[in-house]
Length: 443
Ligand code: SF4
Image (cartoon, helix red, strand yellow):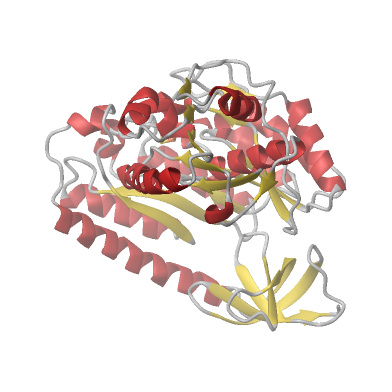
């Protein structure tokens, strides 16, 4: 039987879909990218933004016709929206066969078998605190990088965010188990590991306390992965600034494989708004982390997440965000226009901001960002950087591309001795706001 998996939302969902695909292959199913030929259609959903929910519901809605013509097909919704809206989805979409929430995903192959036998609507949305049964399988890939989910859930309850309600409380895996997964990936030729979680810097901390911890099990994990032979680069996403303490900062500086590009969600530069967001840091704490890292990690770059037009955000609040963004000089930023998520405290806040102001503020930050990245990339010209080769460039397959350790996409001429996964030295000849262009040295 052929299975089609469509993924909405974040890298954690991508990782889950990858593990589910690998588990289904092992059970003898075949994966297909063509939904028309699939016998089983799975939709791994996202609840973070309303748009993603509407897209998934719309997509499954139009499959009603298909099911009339091909009644044998199975349709399942998985992940965050399945968790939060389980039975409502089954009622709303009578042709939907099953829903599986975030804590039950590893049961998918069994659930499909159950569904094939019973042929009735089924719902699996119980929460589960044990993640030793985490989904550690990986699909074969030609890529140099792969993802490892190190934890699930989040305890932070930022006032705008639905994640703690749909992914549940934080649950971390054991360091040894993660290291074992990383070693297996290294044996398969993976050079770069991305450690994934909703709040990776809180990894392994029993309970998020109100005071900032001086411990950092996440730093211990970074050291462990750093020591694995064959792994050349380690990245992670997303940490919360509250848990970014000196131990973690020094570990990043000391571990040569931990990359000098840090994604550090800012969300707002206004202390008043940060408080309303329940972010548990202020702009001074955020800047202290950035300054310490800039001081001890050469050529470090930062990326971030920002929400513009949070309820009640004044011009003054917005300018605080703009100023701090320019001061840090982010190389990339995911700028989101605030949209209320039902069930979160911020959805009930007064002073929602009109759409045209959201758009205006978004455009201002995007223009600033382009200016900053152009400046930074210019500073990288006429220097030599180590590049992890990824393969042919998407725009021009005659040329190849890779990344610097600080995550700059770099394009260079192909030569026959080049292989995906090589680490080469490239002289940067010129740059644009998005890309570096260079010449290979001695390869
Ligand atoms: S840290 Fe905040 S924004 Fe991030 S997942 Fe947790 S609640 Fe959501």
